[in-house]
Image (cartoon, rainbow over all chains, first blue to last red; front, top):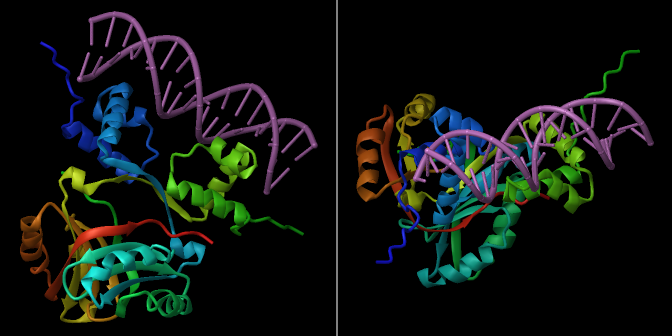
Length: 158
Length: 158
DNA sequence: GTTGAAAAGTGCTGCGA
DNA sequence: TCGCAGCACTTTTCAAC
């Protein structure tokens, strides 16, 4: 009887521990992870390959300090749409606003909730007036400026 | 006359281009970046070292898909404090709530604005009731659940 | 500051258990 | 399925421009 063993699609404790280490520092060498978890480097490699194939790992990104690059203002925008059905079209246009780094379709007061990073308050006003208020279906917006980011981290696994 | 030359603390166009490439994919080899920008691998290394020393680079993190790890709910919380002066103490306690991945001190309706990632609606309710409502100074909270994350990216440099 | 190449360290692959 | 060992590649260093 033919019996093809599918790659193990379960995520076990070892996988979680590997991910936990790399989520904090993606440049940690496999050999160091292996030593810490008391397995071989090859095992780390196999597990990482599995996790990539499963789509659990979306990639590795470099974290930069926006302030050091002249981006001083982080703000949140609640956007009211005339009709909920305009969501897709609005998102399409909002994708062109490079200062928007995160955008959600949310329950509650607003249809759209966005996080935006810009140089200063003038820059923020420009984006609001010129790029966002002009989008089809956008009724009005509420802005919340972040005065301090006290927590910024990834989810803690398990 | 003693004249110590400080390391060049300016960020030029080459630095920006290097950062842009690595912000999309932190695993891009230096040799490949060098080839693309038509400089040597050594130069990339020197620039990266400078950017690290300047604190522009905060680290590299592995991006995972929370849903594939059983975290299905992303929500935003607006938290009202009785007094603004309770902020520091509240943050200290909120840091222990592992499901909170981002926390800001904001202008507008709320004192605190948080992003939270959890398993399901029950888990969210648990955190709200048991971990957040009990914190000193927390008056009430407003919850916005993300039904769809349409944009998630880093700032576009220059 | 940049280059190019040598040295050190890491990631990858196949065989064996 | 895991671990070990050799090979390929990348990062790091350094003398010279």
